[in-house]
Length: 374
Image (cartoon, rainbow, N blue to C red; front, side, top):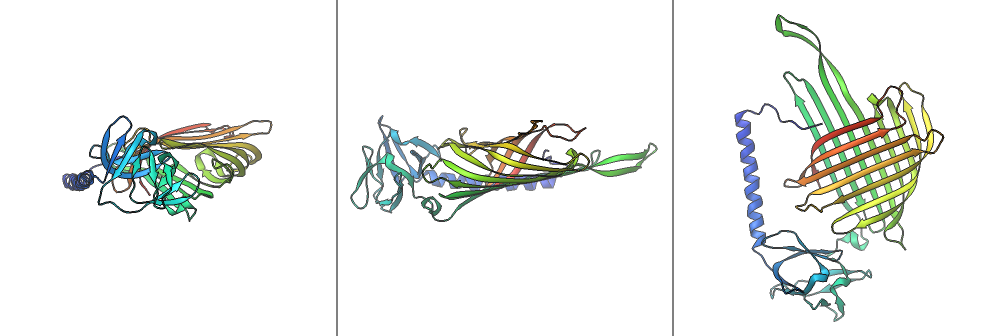
């Protein structure tokens, strides 16, 4: 499903150009102002000196806002000294790797050593986070998500309406995590039933549905106290797809999960468990069975520029005699516009080894989406 702009007149083109130009100028002005401020001097072990704003410190990585990069990331082991400007005496809140919350004022590092406000001396690499959010200290949840849509209205030789809406949101704390993924696709097209060759306006069309499906997936994860990268969880899903003969398919079950990677370059989670699958078909015989279930989710900013590569994979294997397999895989590349808007190109491949008789087991799609991230 693709977003296709159609039949824009000249006035619409001019108005659109003005809006984009205005947004570009505003973004440019703010970036110039930010790059002119230098409140710290960072000295590396090789003698390099960087004047910049200190934006963040996470997972042994220092993020700087410089005149040549708004998000320059430097490994903490490369940093020798950090000198705050004389007029910057504000307190810096630090969350250490041992779980303590301390303060430093000003933020001055000498030879990789930092003196805290109470006189204690620590290494720069002992810091876990700079100015942590309340949820990172066990207070409440961090809420993030992406709502996106692909919508096409075509009139003329082609008469069709296409709507694809998706929501992916997550509530994360130091104790547990809630995840919700939902999508709906509704496509309609006009098919010529009869026409008069001598009268171009005498055409009879019939509206027919070409896609009608939806899905909701919910997950809950509880982090194990002794193993911060391990967790137990339960997931549930409900979906329907008229054109694959699925009136309603649901599954529910527990799993064990592990964070394989959770660093500055990206994160990757894997989960393995069991689910009970119940499928109600329109025409085929209904099925119920116990299945092995695995999930792989991840994202990475390795390409830079705030762009993201993301992956969602779900596998369900029937443990009974037929060993039917269900695979749902989505791979995408997202990149930001402005004001939180994001565009994404997605490839989705679904395989249903338990498809009803006469239905295709493989379904693939290419989507261009526009959404809002928070």
